[in-house]
Image (cartoon, rainbow, N blue to C red; front, top):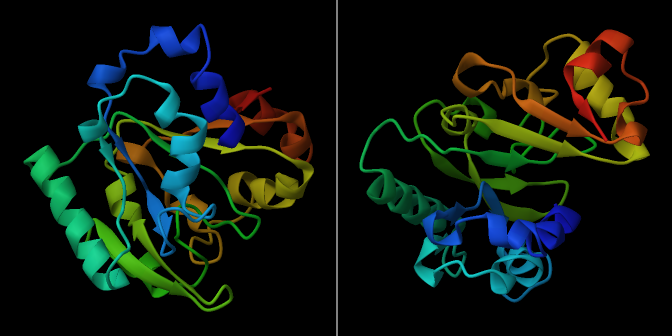
Length: 207
């Protein structure tokens, strides 16, 4: 999303958005210091949030200055306080797609894929030796709309599997995402979409 954020921070997009009405949350975060370039919130601030007139109180980062489990519980409580309902409804959730089919920090075969009650969970990714905090799939699916932003030749294979392959959500967690039972929106560049059949290609937005 780096380039997307840069575009939103420039004219005319910067002026078209009513930033005072926008609240920003993160679907996942790496448990690294807040000033670490690998921190998702740090990147969003550098490319977008520090360049637009969004009120500071409308920015809700995941704070990992405690244990991952405590950070997840705290963020879930913040979400519940914000929505004041057991049926939260984000207007938009923006996601990417990993080369292994992961989204947010929902990685293949991770136990968090079985979670049905929690909104937010801590996860450990053995392959990366890293703790993270992530929205769960059922929570993401309560959004009004989910948009996937996918680019690059290295994503072509996994995109084909997610959209045209058999339903294997523990192998391809992206297949779990169906906001309110509907298909998400896919924004895909030509390189990432080149393996898709013509019919699938007509159903997504290619740029």
